[in-house]
Image (cartoon, rainbow, N blue to C red; front, side, top):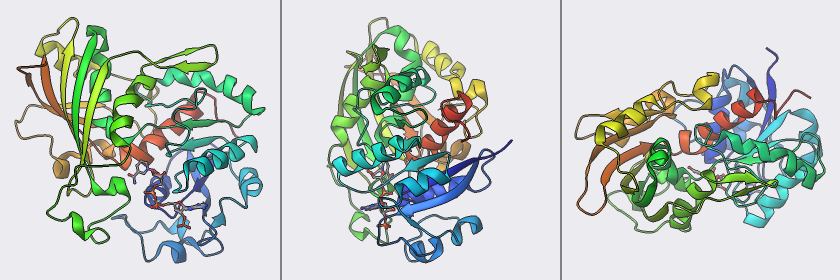
Length: 361
Ligand SMILES: NC(=O)c1ccc[n+]([C@@H]2O[C@H](COP(=O)([O-])OP(=O)(O)OC[C@H]3O[C@@H](n4cnc5c(N)ncnc54)[C@H](OP(=O)(O)O)[C@@H]3O)[C@@H](O)[C@H]2O)c1
């Protein structure tokens, strides 16, 4: 199979580095362009990241000698060199919105890790196992942008991956009310312990904007495509508190849930065990074989032990039990920079290619 040529916009950052490592030996994708700010442009990738490489794997050989391009100045040039781009940049929201539209209008599909376009009503925000049908909105978006190939698709926030996927196969029981507390790793802030020593032996009870995202984003994912836009679902009602904890990778979520038609614990576990999404049916290269894993051990899932399950793409669940105020409570864990960021975006890109929304130029 001819590989798709891929660009990474923001390839020098924390999420960008993760994209670069995920492109190494990818069966469908060929890393072709890396772009970042004017500060990095003109250097080789190795020079640009040598002092801030944060991955445990070394810099992939194929990436080292790529000369970093200027993400803002070289839009047309980059769009001409690749079949699509991943985008993970740290800029002002309006600037990101404008930059991503520039790429889309240059007929270059954008698979974005940024939050800037998550609430644009004709931009699909997709967890491939949950709402692949939202890709149907892309033709309407192309019409608005005046493009044939170009469009923007986004992944959702990393904080929701520890509970929204677990609730998804239970929606048939009428999920009514959800309370969730998330315990989020420092890599979610683009940091390591070396760069954020204040986080050792600490907990910070505030992550800007995260609680709103945790409460609202699942509703767009559970929404429906209507008249060329995505209309968000009216429920369930979700309330969230999000805490930063001294863990390098892996966001944990403690969830409480009530149903209109309360299932038994056995039925819930059966739903999780049986659940298969479109990526599993299509056998996409980055799809975990078992998306939702339930651990019977009372002290699992643990961030350090379980975050890398199935390449960091599976969701680990445990401690399902009755609650005194809600019907049930349980614990979920997802790798925030794999499933929650770059890995989730790579899976989305694979889905877009498999479903024909991204083609070879
Ligand atoms: N970290 C996570 O787990 C996570 C999870 C979900 C979402 N996100 C989101 O992903 C995005 C990137 O996060 P990050 O943690 O990877 O940030 P980061 O480590 O600070 O990297 C930022 C990237 O953006 C580039 N950049 C900055 N200003 C630019 C400009 N004016 N023009 C072009 N490129 C520019 C940087 O290039 P230089 O190296 O040249 O400065 C770098 O490549 C953010 O929107 C963040 O909210 C992060």
